[in-house]
Image (cartoon, rainbow, N blue to C red; front, side, top):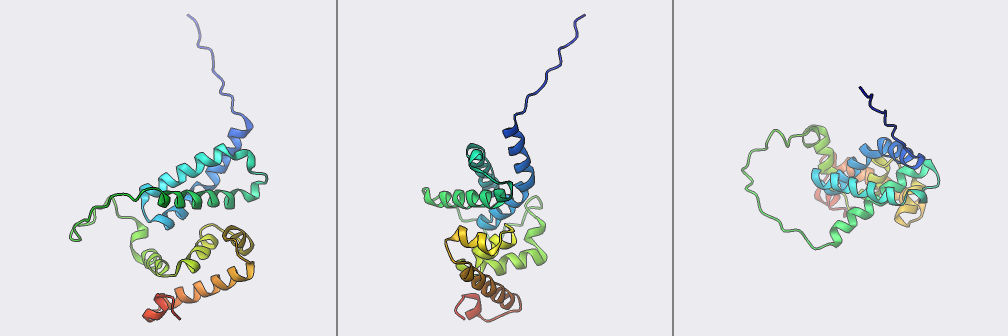
Length: 181
């Protein structure tokens, strides 16, 4: 009786690098994508497209420390591409539909939901840098480079974003919620 020949799987260094990159940053990419689009399926698609583009351009990544901002940049651009394409058809759903338990997630209830709602009320110019810092773990300099702004302007936006967020969470008036103050 013949014994089966063991098959060894050859994994090249590039593939190992990409797998390590994916394991290290997939969770952060998903969270950031979900914050951008607020849809689970679309967030997952964005992460997949991001990783596909990252795989194709992996040789462009020079330093491992730059991987997270690089991936977040790819994800932001993928999100923008979604909106460049033709608008998707929408269907109005009855507001009286009960929320299915399968759709319930901890982020839709409690403090996380309140924080998400408050952040959605921030003007885009304040929300984006705050998300890049909080979810992306990016420094002011990295955010400034990403957004094409000066670091001082980003620091000001982050300060104002936190002040407006605090005011919204404490029940600030509509002028704060609309970013008019």
